[in-house]
Length: 508
Ligand SMILES: Nc1nc2c(ncn2[C@@H]2O[C@H](COP(=O)(O)OP(=O)(O)OP(=O)(O)O)[C@@H](O)[C@H]2O)c(=O)[nH]1
Image (tube, rainbow, N blue to C red; front, side, top):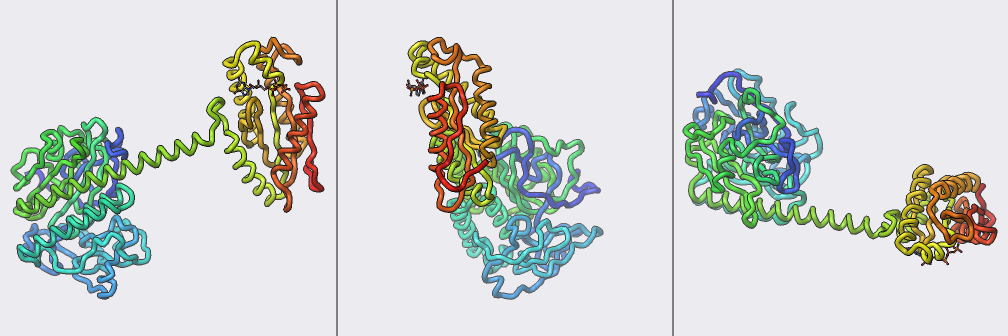
């Protein structure tokens, strides 16, 4: 049998994995495959929950060549507090790894708690968690009490109900899609005889699995020629069959299933449930058990409900994500001028206050150019408002270029007037930037047959600069630039004039 072949190995992998290509239907990125889906390189984390520490593997219903970690007692206070490793991912709720005889023995983790849950800051060498302090268990996944194997039928029913309640709570209250999904698969793989629990998500088209969150152990050779970073098509594996049929798949004997792709020597049965939200298939919940008869009708019902909760969590995360995007777009558009696309007056006022404070702290000058198109009324009257609008867009573009070159900000100040804010510019540098701008407008040779100044569109520019000092207000800078603009207009237009700040502190 292929899966009993030699050369198999266990590996740890990042359990949030994008397979690559394609975007996930749940706004995530590319995805991965559960261990068994085929065409996927090996991944591992945690171990088989049903391993009883210190018992021979054969007595645990595991392959003879499996061994488990020895038990370690944890101070009961920490256990009751439900502590977990701070990364909350790789080690969270995991059991000690099951290894094949003859391999490097697992490194002993001295802080492994009840049921093999790792609770401390000292992890095995191969643990992906950085050593950090113990934290409390915010999701409340860790529960002290008898394991699945130690419970009778009623106890197991109660445990399934408890797990479902935890999943529901996490789905509704958890933050971040992958964090929530990770908590769910961790919980399933830790508390139940589930060697591997994964949630694998489809791309927008529903043709490939492109994102996976998983927990457990996987032991197998990477299939020959497996495209490790390729999306996994739904034409393959039992998970693919689950999507193609749109129905849950129960594999009571994985060896007898033609679609089963070996993932772990100890796995005997598998249950795959479609994750569906309002009729749309989002992915598959995949559980692989070390027990042949683990997936009883009652357990399957619970896992169906878990899949529904997962769908809800994904939907919720998507709605939150979309809302955040919409809010960001709204915020951005509220700071832009609709006609020209440069910053609007509100944005300018905000930036002026920020730059004023910043230059005050640095004791450097802040300069302002007020740029006003000459005889713009005549332009509108002669060539029409649409042409006037086009001219304003062009002026805005030139202002934005000058601002960018000088690490400043260009904004539409109002009507046909633009403002260019130039931090760390004294009056001389600001005047030079203003001259550049004026010449660039002239060079565009925008038609203006009705101008009293030239045959083309021209601008007048008022310039001011000041080193902000205590007791001064940014308003002084604007007034000074405005006076400069008035002077430029009064002295014939198409020119740059400075306006001086009426204060003892001046720049330049
Ligand atoms: N096309 C267009 N025109 C605008 C816009 N905003 C303001 N204006 C026009 O700009 C003109 C400004 O006129 P004035 O304030 O008299 O100034 P001016 O004609 O440029 O004369 P001077 O500034 O003294 O050279 C008005 O006719 C406004 O209607 C706009 O968004 N689009």
